[in-house]
Image 1 (cartoon, helix red, strand yellow):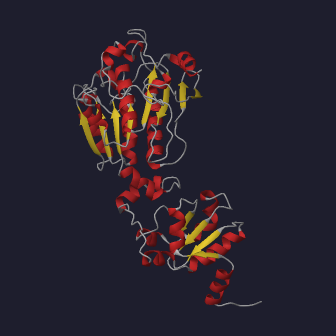
Image 2: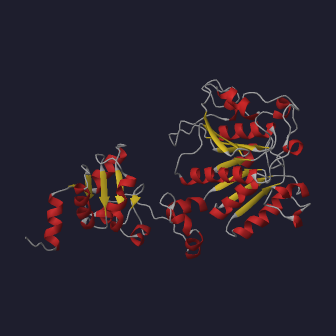
Length: 417
């Protein structure tokens, strides 16, 4: 058996693999070639800087995790370390696993920097944050990078009531950096059955003030901004602009149509939900985004082109609502928000989740964008915000937490048929 020293082993590995220079890799990425780049250094090396858009898999986990990140064994796969030694040995191992197009980067990250190519120095979690969010960072889909995205995110909640309460609590606990809340109502005793942001001592206070105190107690790092005013066509752009995501928990049709239109025009995703008695609905309206190459899905107007006549659909105050129901639906809104902010999983774009707690059934209906939609269609006719008070024949407010029934399951199925 031939015994090789370190240098001989490295040379043997390099003779059996393909190597690219940093310039070659840079040219292929600029040409938009489909190349997966993996950094196999240790975490402390990664935190000092890495090639942009590269995956981080420490050398000791490479063979164990690579299939999760790159299941296609024929696609170009570039491995790099600090100087090109560890990556050469790793590339040969991946070849033995069946990867046919694996490449080692000559000179590694040091060679990349010396070539004058751009690199990214990531922000890092503090020790306190690392402990607080450890159950998140353990998840491969989130990790440190995903948690940092949450810490830098801004989410706007329309309403601090039934739906807004659980959504706000979990988003604050998750570490969302800034939470805006639009609600000009005060806490009433009848709210306490379901609006868990507020307690007995908060009765009579503005909901945004009560919510801010609760959220800061859960997570002092979260910045909470309250808007004690109704959202209208005059201020919607000013309030919504600058947020990464909007969660709608309003209780009336004028606000629902208005927020939908504003989010579509601003290109901001909207996580929309409603509850009524024992039933709930959740979906995500993702506007078309050219910069991110997103085609976009349907909007609220695609599902519900026309609002019901005034008085046809009773509010939760008139018909009642199961107190725990908004906890389920609002939590699903928070999950969808986190998925969108971090960038994992399949959000409810083009799908309407319908929940009936009387028999505990969850149904998902596929919905499509209407090319003739006046807001998100191919040739939109609604290009500025409308006063929906007259359009809907309903008074506008943003102060309640649970939304009215969206025409019920049968009506929704009829719309989607």
